[in-house]
Amino acid sequence: MDDSMPNGDIRQGGDTRQGEVCGPDGCAVPAAEAAPRPAVATAGTRIDIVSDAVCPWCYIGKRQLERALAQLAQEGLTFSVHWNPFQLNPDMPKEGRDRTAYRIWKFGSAEQAAALDARITEAAAGVGLDFRTDLMTRTPNTIDAHRLVWFGGRKGVQDAVMEAVFKAYFTQGRDIGDREVLADCAAEAGLDRAEAATFLASGLADREMRAADQAAREAGVNGVPAFFLDGYGLFSGAMPAETIASALRRGRTALRQKEAAE
Image (cartoon, rainbow, N blue to C red; front, side):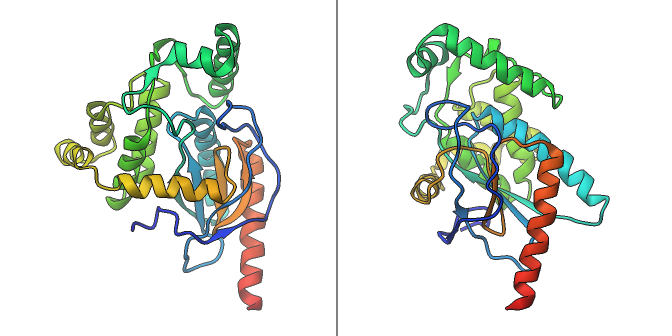
């Protein structure tokens, strides 16, 4: 199993602060702090993010994390980033659903759904993202998207694949439940499109993605994005870059002190 996948060792603790997250009931609920603890060679260098490809706060949080990492790099602090699967809509049919109808059902009215879209679009603009909810017609099943992100991890371009998938859905309004769209995302991330298409058609890693999603739920994750350092919970939600940088500094120091004491 690729090291971007959860390995079942779940830890809780760390910073308890929470930002904006997406959960089964929408994109403004608290999230529990729990995630797989990866094996690392050096304490305080591995960041795991539990996320879903249709979570707007996950894309916004990615931008905030990138800003934080750029700041920390100037201080000589470097980290590796790994994306882990979560399904906000685990019962979504394979073909997805009409987005307008689904969101009316989920949020109670077209007006409420539109208000949520407006709020998220404004927040996205604050980090330089142009969300085009007006172009989104489908709410997709995201298993194949998670499989592609996993595949990208095997090829050393996981973050680029995650970026391409987020971009396709949120800024281009494309149906990321469509394997042809996902193959385009793979090509944009630098992968061979035909090889990615063959992988997507194979069904490989489908079971692993579902198992990882279920493991996260059983560990208490109920909202994303959720961020972890060496498997220890830092925070949930799209925190400001300064807050993320501060949490990573403190977490790295604490983990290294713990390692030195053992």
